[in-house]
Image (cartoon, rainbow, N blue to C red; front, top):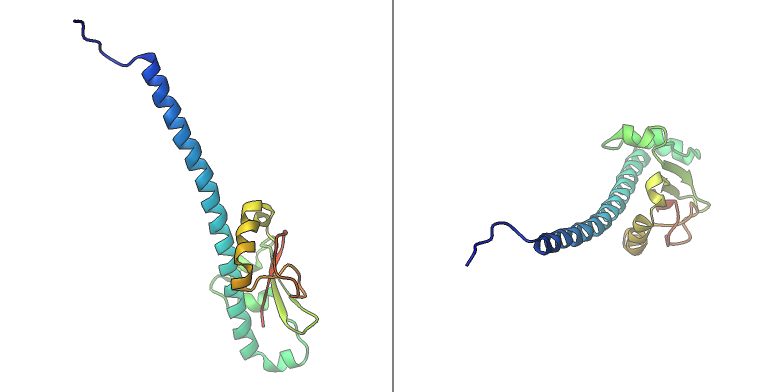
Length: 150
């Protein structure tokens, strides 16, 4: 009987195919995790801005009663990371809705990804996300998302 050393070509090909299948599965699941993380980050940022707007509101009663709508710079000074919200192209905005409420918005480039939109849509009701600045339509996809600021 003769002893063989090494692997046959068939055994090597089987191992390569199995590694390829596992790599493909990892790529699919990592994209999903990235989209979920981006959606969580957007919600977290809007909540941070909401907290900042409450602090701004408490410190600026006279200005608000006079009809002053805060700018992103006004709100950012009360946030943990002001540069993130005021940087050019950050995607964050603040406006006043017809109801008198402030709407905080985000329309950054990450919003064009379908996976991020899907995750935000599934969380919309529980975290209070809207599709329009007027805060009348619950978020159900799109390239911008809004939250009540005050």
